Image (cartoon, rainbow, N blue to C red; front, top):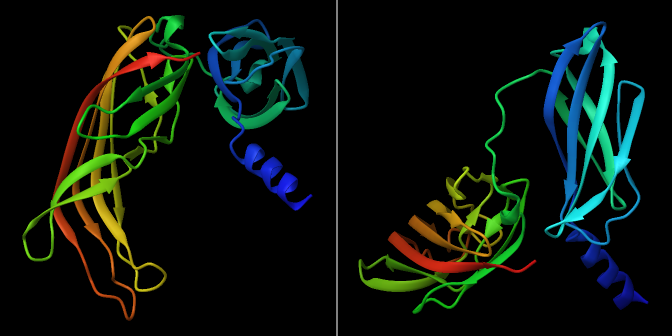
Amino acid sequence: MGAALAAALAIAAFSPHPTAKLVSASKSGGSVTFTVRVTIAASPCTGMATLSAAGHHWKAPATLSQATCHATIHGKLPKKEYGKSLAFHFAIAGRSGSKTLKLKSGPLGVPVPSYVNGGWHGNLSSPMSGYVMFTVIDGVIQKAFSTSSGFVLDCKDPNDQPVKTFFIVFIKPAMPLQANGSFTRTYHSKIDPNTSSNGSGEDMIMTASGTLGNGTGTMTVTASGSLYSGHANGQTQYDESDCHGTNTFPVYKSS
């Protein structure tokens, strides 16, 4: 029973969460009409998606497309709510979430082709041996992108000698795609080495860029900076500096 419970908890921990974004909002008479798109990378995709805010409720049928369950929900609120930031609660495909959305018209989003939506994967080019797996929803590579540990950095050890280190490149923010499927995002991870626990830290700048097409694409991942270890009491300090690594590889649509 303990193993089954642990497995269930592990599955729940990695279950996707739905997202919502405001598509449009406009004033009409004494009301503000708006459209919200709710999505989740999940299957099966059946039933109705729901949305609520300020004591009002709306719903729309959920539809599966390119491995993404989505629903476009139209709502109406009193005109006084226009321009305000409201807490919206939503549910789709058995999962729920919440987000604050500002009911105000703005520039139209970049029209990204729907064929980029879904799951993607790729293997780093030799001599590296890592891989990537990521999901695109509504033209956005979802946050917390990372490689496996097979990404190799060329660094200098404390004696200024060359050394190779395995590393996991991670980009916390989401990465929106442009109309042609291109993207780029840089993330700076600065963690001062602690004096307890494992005594590690880092000062790394990581970038992911590339272009996604209809089923295939390319990606370049780079990382540079310093890695710290052994800074806890009783440990031998071992810092690696001038670290750098880059890899360009093909990626493929998997769902």
